[in-house]
Length: 467
Image (cartoon, rainbow, N blue to C red; front, side):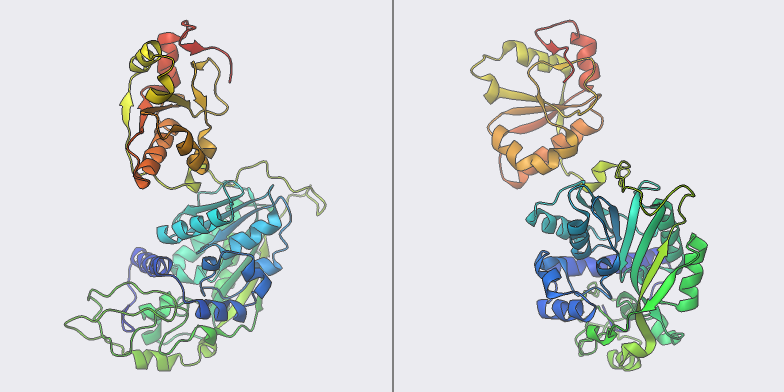
């Protein structure tokens, strides 16, 4: 990203620019010395950093919300703009195995990185989930389901209307009496026009910051009437690397790019650069912009913001924490979208396999997988394996080991319009990733409904017992 690149006028383009910038961070990785310097500057202890995967903290913070969030065992927590997952993992350690912690991020690359980090700690949904979503739109979270909402240097990156929408969503998803702990950058004074429209300064968490009275107003409009704002006195110059502005995008001093040039997306950290182009020069030089914000603390400050959603009249501080309401509106959101589109096989064709396959060849020739969990009433394909879709993705390594030599692995659910095709596609993706051609995923068309319509009375083909 050029130091002179201009902030787009469209809110959607601003979101795209931010998403691309932080996606590049996820793909390229953070400079460890830089990440450690920033983490320590904003309150993370060495013990905390050692307890999480190294790649989960990337020098993108302006505070440490978990340290003051008083998260209790069994609580439901979401982290807005979860990045590599550092605050999610710290929160999960406090919420324990009965809690649910969900990280939300706009970048698919950050989500992929966070999921890899979670796998290193064997943390799986629903205890720990990472979900890709646009933070300025409706969150994929159930209303009144969350005890605590965290965010760390993210809200300032949204367009003004997006900030307001997000905080209204935060109020919606919180349980009555639920709380927020938001670490964010707040402007101390009005930015110059040159700085306000500078894309690098915006992506660097500086020029998108609201002033204190503006932040109070959007909190109040969202429903938070008694928000408390605390200046943490964190040194924002911890971000500064040479001519960089804020936490992101250090361009090489010799590089120049026009606003319309093919600059590569910015990346946070000290090592990124904008590839030079053959023509065009930036309208705002690196040195000019960097000079304006030579001391970031002159322009902005790191704040921690506390607020609660009004509790029901009958609620009390001694109420037992309940996790009865799932946090995610759809459990599928916690998992990757599959790439494969497995072919279908009819119920009649599956029946022929069951009738004709020799007993000593059946395990090699085919297997039938029922991915329903609580909806088995009416019966299922005799001899089918029960593998609930909700945990199927996490169990793929073990599943592959069992069925990798089985020619046809046939999946079905109630009507084979949702869970069955999804699990089949995940399995086929996994086969492809491992270069295994000895097994193939298929979907039984029509699922259990089609099977029972044709073979409900045939005890050789249908097990009538509820599984």
